[in-house]
Image 1 (cartoon, rainbow, N blue to C red):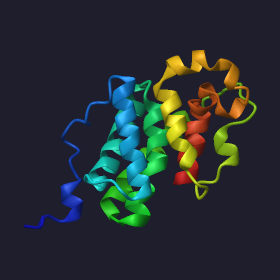
Image 2 (cartoon, helix red, strand yellow):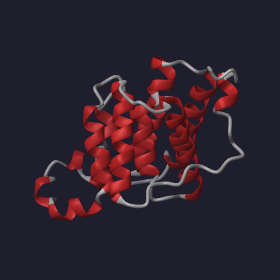
Image 3 (cartoon, rainbow, N blue to C red):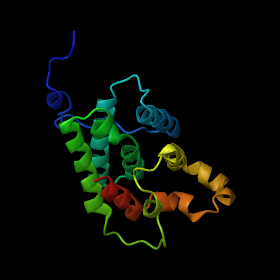
Length: 175
């Protein structure tokens, strides 16, 4: 039997707490894999719910100044277009745009020392294939120390991707 609830009601669950954030790099890897499947259009779960949960977790992380804000923001950049373009849903789209607006408002004026950010050179309509690797890099900080020599390009350094100004730039471009 098909769900007869209006789409707006199925994803309007503000009274429920966000799904807990992954606690380990392996859990983040599983979530990043799901996000990549959503982006590619081959996710077998409830993709719209996954996008809304990402937006809810992003809002909670921004409000708390959480360390996962970069992962949630870039994850939403990766999968947010699903509810806007692939399967339009006004309520889910509003939730995604509100989450990105919260990122821009909270992080957009934080000063930094970086000369450039990845958001400066990457229009959102560009291919997002590299985002999965960026997310994996951010989820595995231990990889960064082991591969410091390989990270000669400042634009792929974790600190520039996780920089509040970079996150705000992607959020601003998304909105």
